[in-house]
Image (cartoon, rainbow, N blue to C red; front, top):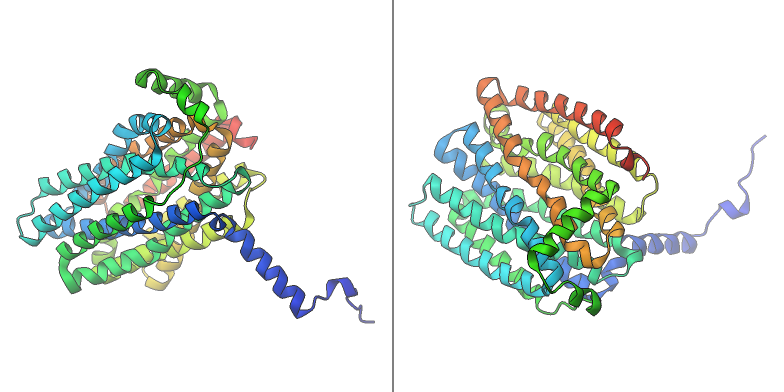
Length: 425
């Protein structure tokens, strides 16, 4: 005898439509705040500039040197300025108007990108020029990123903070989907110099989006931090050391930088030597990672605040690392793109949730300094890039990712045992 569904379980088309609208409203709830919309649009332009640069710079380096080690070094050097400037950027973000920091850094980045585009266009570019450009862009981006991340909590209420951080990652990942593919296509269409001019234009677009921003901060917390720059920096370090949960989250952030990011440095080798593709195909592989990242962050934005965060942290990291190993031995391009998409989804769920968790735990007067210390994990990217490059030269790119992947899984297991503060989240 068939069992009928209860009437309450059967919804009308109108009720289903209402639920869909409610779910969409939850997913994009932070966008109802005007200043967050401007911040989100600025993220879109800035992320577009970054992805166009990464694809073009990697292709330029490999075209000039044909060296896996040089690819690892260049991709690693990009992160050195983040580590050097992070503590200073954090203090400035707590002491100075964050809007001013964002505006000034965009002007600086636009000028540097324009000068480098001229250098490439005149065919005078040398390897040391690339290193200099990378260091300057990284320095400006480091100051901008800290100010921009801390500003999120100044444009949305606390209840929408996780959603806002996830949506910020969505804008990043939209450009991650289209930026590499477009960048790779444009290399053949307008040349690498044209791409760097486009990057400069993106920075100008970000500057325009900064102008109408209205950041709401506690005047008392601002005035309380005015006196001494280095004393304020020391206070930030002491806060992190004292708060074991925040410290553990920062330590856990080392995992993606060491064991996942090397895949970006080695991607031109896989594109050229394993899948026999040109610049356009190289861009498509980055696009696959971006597509997965976009899906992952949209999912997190829909869920909002997550219970049992520790479970999400460790599962996301483990799957992302495992996908590097799978990718390294995959010779089917469609399967490789799926694997890259899964990796992108997992790593961005982790990054977004990690960032939002720290922001929720830290008071606004300390937020810039703490988040800046969280970005210090980028200091180990050069190490991961260098190790992957050496392994690729010595063995192969596939074995390089495999060895790093196995080491990464061991690191995650050790972190689970040795960082009890994270397990309690």
